[in-house]
Length: 318
Image (cartoon, rainbow, N blue to C red):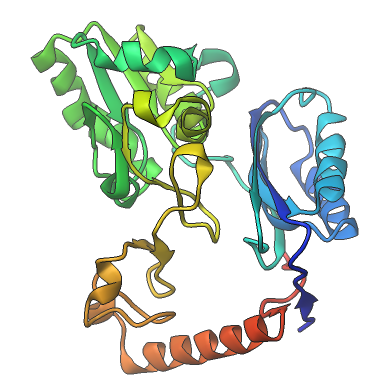
């Protein structure tokens, strides 16, 4: 295991990116991206599939730009859906580039999100759309994400994974459309990628008037002033920041290392919350052996943090 030094300054740049575009040879692209990331000590996760590329990476600004240049030089990837943030400490401990069947897993063959996604709605126009009573607003994220933040009037499918969304729509979403008489559907997710697929899915199901928030919640929180916002709560993000609010300021949540779900300030006062080990959600689901293992992992991570090093190794094999 190789220790990584974690410098405190300058701040680390975080880039969340995706694009739906054909990838002819995903394994070859995986190796190219792994090499580019390793060369600049970039950390994070990138997924490569025949339908495109998705992921979040972090590192020094020039290293991030070097990786993005490699991606944008690929046919079909001249432009990316891209969001930047800054953080004082690396939000990832290693770099993983993986080949997958889909860059966001829905399990519905034949969907072409690059061609068939719904109509984009900019953050500045989003409020008017979702405030219209003839719009059915649907959160395409998972239940634990919706619990800590959502848009006003949004329907929560309370799915455990994105793969569950098609069944929810067929069994409940379509009925909601009929019941409410909504003339259009507006959908949103964290960064936009799930909505590219979910809107394409609704169109494949025969729903034509489908819209989605361009750039997702993150671009909305970055663009719309808090006093004008229809967002309530925090937005879960899939890195060590855990949650962000308006202006992409880090939120109050931490991550339970047992179940990998967000824990708010009240949750950290629970007698079942043990930092680095478990929370009230997963306390009863962990046996003594698991708790002991998590406790030791947390102890080692704290030792590494105090020494200014990362506990996880440099690279992970796919």
